[in-house]
Length: 359
Image 1 (tube, rainbow, N blue to C red):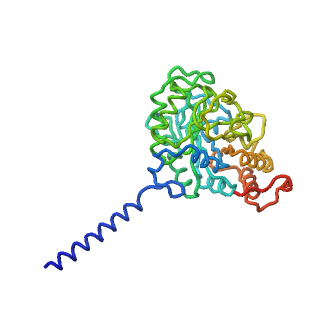
Image 2: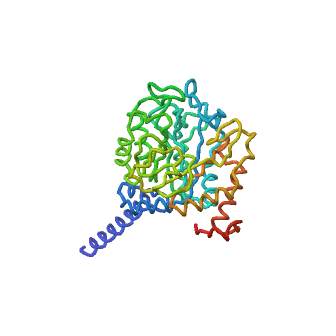
Image 3: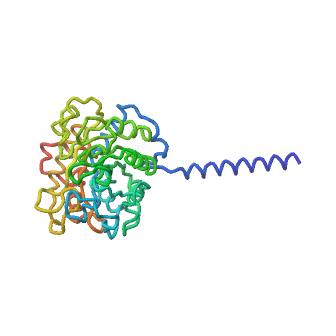
């Protein structure tokens, strides 16, 4: 009898151990096998700065109402979610191209000034899951980033023309509770977020930058807030239409000229569109079919990549998916060329002057 009981206990222990192993395997992990809850801990600033700097080069995805309006800024009034008329959404293509280009992260536009949300928010009906596309694009992108080993950062417009008191192109209104609710969704439902690119073009939405910093840190202490202009704050210096530069040199900070005396940055980013200057259509978003062959040369992009690496910056190259949710062929071709330069597969014309830098 004693032997029978002992055997039963041994079997139960083995079964319990097996169940625990299976449960551990089911714990969600982000890119690079990171446990989902690891990002709730704060990393030392010096270590975190190096982690961000090591991201080097990424793809900024702008895809929203302005993709379909042919304008950079699209009035929110009179438009419901149906205005977003995408016929597809190929997040795997975005990430696959980014990987071939030598990129390490995706910066994704979650909400522009028009208030249309590219995730399944509970704060408004003006969201992508109510559009004909009918899917949570951010959730799909998170899966693609994990699949291809890419990190994820988010763009978020502070002002919102659906907020009380908003005036198109002049003021983004005030609704701090909705701003907080949306940020909480983004920071608690989509895994680790490397940084948030806050657009201050239409105000702060009623929550100051200092208050926004504190709110973000509650949910993800390692997520670096950054602001393209307005009251200097955050932990990452943004450079809208910027260029490579040292952290203490604001010449590369684009519109962020008020950052000169601010000492809170531990990293620096700059960004610009892959579309060169052109007449009509948008700049940061997919423009118009007539512009489908316009693209900056791979040489220019690669040179700025080298600059980013030299100064420890990260370079977010903006690329706008088209009506079908795919990157333009000219962008794909150019980015593959950049990737071949970065990985040393093609000889760069100035290799005798600029040393090849390992990806």
